[in-house]
Length: 310
Ligand code: HEC
Ligand code: HEC
Image (cartoon, rainbow, N blue to C red; front, side):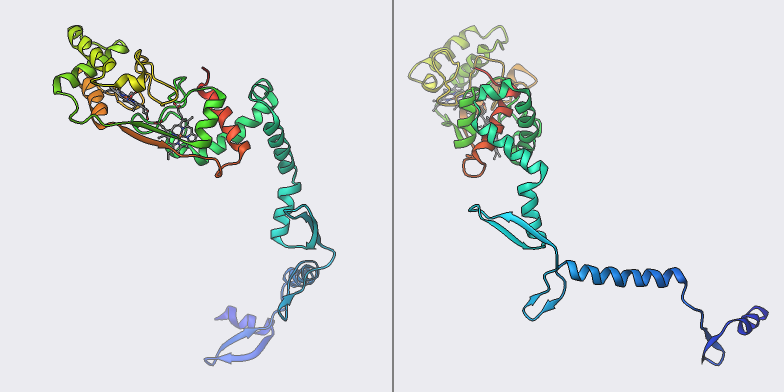
């Protein structure tokens, strides 16, 4: 009580009283507050003058001394008042990073693959750009590390290729897409012959249980004969054909049959039998039209250096 009585005498009040005794002090505004307030007023006026600000009829004030110049698609130079869209376009056209990137892309477009690979400067650019392209467009299927998934998407890191691993092959794959097709052989073979085929396929990469020589011989007969017709696509030597995208069955790399994941010989046989019975139908989409020619080139180099060759 004493305290408030003291204040009553020291500080002016506005003279209003609520509920009988609640009063309002009449202190001056703090100086810092007043200056800040005037500061914002001055800032606002300057801002309104320089930037587009006030609606006027169907238009608006465009701002003074503040223009942006950029090029339209057909190469004409245009100068407009400041606006975020033009500024973005101008940045894309003239920003340091953008100019450098365009120069590089043009250089890449004109270089042969051999040139690119032999030039560490170009290669550095290609790898940084293509990593982003791969993450945006390819990783959803092939995995972030391009390791793929057996049965679904081929591994792009190994140096085994369904469709060939030269620059031209890879470029073709990415630009035009590929269809990996093997017909289903459901009910084509007796259970014994199916098993013989699987045993033969496994034996090609050295997987055997030691007692299957007769079975393997029977499997080879079917594979290379008219009965199975497997050799049409895989070749008599079972090394696959680039033109068909047919897997090389003699290496230890599996792209559809999950042989590595099968724990026992019996399970490996089953994994191969399953693929023979179900066939294969998987598609790599075409990117021509969705990606520019330069972008496809960047990705081709990227994929090639992951596991290219032959
Ligand atoms: C929708 C899933 C999908 C996307 C997205 C995809 N791929 Fe593929 N890709 C596949 C499939 C499926 C195959 C296997 C085709 C086959 O079985 O012959 C494949 C095959 C390939 C091959 C051939 C591999 C070989 O052994 O010959 C390359 C190279 C390849 N993809 C690169 C790319 C690149 C680069 C991108 C991104 C621009 C990409 N893929 C995006 C599904 C995809
Ligand atoms: C019309 C062509 C065609 C014929 C006929 C064919 N294949 Fe295939 N085969 C393919 C293609 C193409 C692939 C690879 C598909 C892919 O990876 O997308 C493949 C893949 C395989 C695979 C999986 C290999 C792996 O790495 O996982 C096995 C096993 C196989 N074939 C066995 C056979 C056997 C056994 C026969 C005969 C009964 C046969 N194929 C007949 C085209 C054919």
